[in-house]
Amino acid sequence: MSLLCLGLEGTAHSFGAGVVSSKGEVLSNIWHMLSPVEGGIHPREASRHHSDMGPGIIKRSLEDAGVSHSDIQLVAFSRGPGLGPCLRTTATMARTLAQKLAVPLVGVNHCVAHIEIGCLESGFEDPVTIYVSGGNTQVIAFAGGRFRTFGETLDMALGNMLDVFGRTVGMRFPAGPSIEHAAAEGVDYHQLPYSVKGMDLSYSGMLTAAKKLHLEGVPVADICFSIQETAFGMLAEVAERAVAHTKKNEILLTGGVARNNRLTEILKGVAERHGARFHRVSPPLAGDQGAMIAWTGILQHQAGDELPLSSSHVMPKWRTDEQDILWR
Amino acid sequence: MKILKKQLLTLGAESAIYIVEYWGMTLALKWRPSKPYVHNEIDNVLRTSRTSRECKMLTFVRTLGVPTPAVHSVDISNHSILMDFIEGQQFKQLVNTSSKKKITSLCHEFGKLLGIMHMRDIVHGDPTTSNAVVDMQSKMWLIDFGLAEKNATIEMKGVDMHLLRRAYETTHWALQETMLESTMEGYVEISGDDAEAVLSRADEIRERGRYH
Image (cartoon, each protein chain N blue to C red):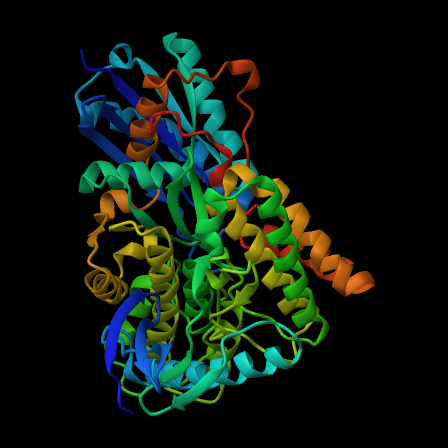
């Protein structure tokens, strides 16, 4: 018999609710992203956004799935990592629902959820995952019972670097799509700091250098083009190092920045060279949303995991490799 | 260059290694092929600078007493280096088959070699157990110096130690504590009082990239 799980995501700028069945059918997936007219994301404003929008999004998600409250047999929520105020708001909604509906509660790791929903969509069994968003830049693979971070940024996330540069030249948050658009018009490549350390990378030097080019009057299109080529080239190298090191033959690209076509093209090249399969998670499942939380909640629950309300505190610094992955 | 026999040994992230017979010896040829999916200018700069850097660093750290393959010739325009082939096993593989005592002593040695380099302000840049080879006499050799740098700051050394710790975490999770401990002992044995600043920086670096 199929079980229905409601998943709530609210680690950073987006709040989402999705209903997924234990057969892996995504019945609904509604989310809303806070997009300030100017400036970046403030944790308090984001948590306010979640508490304002949350109830309506949950309601629409149930309607969209064609189910009622009483059909939900499991509630899952993003327990971490993320911004404390956002996590707490989301957890409060999840606890209330679980209690009201008298169903079990499951706390899901946000990064693990990105990987699992990607595996569901692609049919991949054991990929090297490139997870790139506004808050995260990680190369993750499964080893010894856990998802382990083989490489990550040493300073800022790829998406954050793009957003901050975009803000400097007057683009709205999130700036990734505008940068990709501008880069397509770029002609001249300007050298930017290429900083790879083993399987880690660093983007802060590149940001400073790109801002400097802007002050010097280099056309924005050329800077965007140079940023993309350099930043994605670095990511390709660490991905390649992870594939060579782990000898895995699947590469999964996910997170908000997975929408970028140039990044996808580069990683396809990496996969081809190493004889690996490649999948980019489709936009509705690549960003921060509830379906990934619901699906991972089901996997956890089926492996016997349940979170008592009394110990369901959020974990803002929850590392990907701190959770035993019982279902794999 | 007249190569009699050429056989692909490994395809790494940025290079291919061939075993070649040359001058009556068995040597390793490391070649950095172009990556068509990366912007041409970036690709060329990296292939050239890393080939030249690796060649220099292999030779320089040797003079400090760190065992590295001797460089026989380099072809910058073809991005290739001809060097000694170290007959032995990757440290990474040895960890799976060796006794705890042997692993501990190899880790100790690994830590000492990194300590020697750091004391002379050199970082390896990718200090994983894939980049150490242990020969038949149990002697440890370091390879893969394409990301090595000189004039290293505390920050750069901290990154080196952070990478090493992470390599243990991801690849040798069951033994990571013991391995880290022995490596640190070897490292501190060489770098003495200088170790503390580097190791505390490494802890700081570990926490930095994540959003809290």
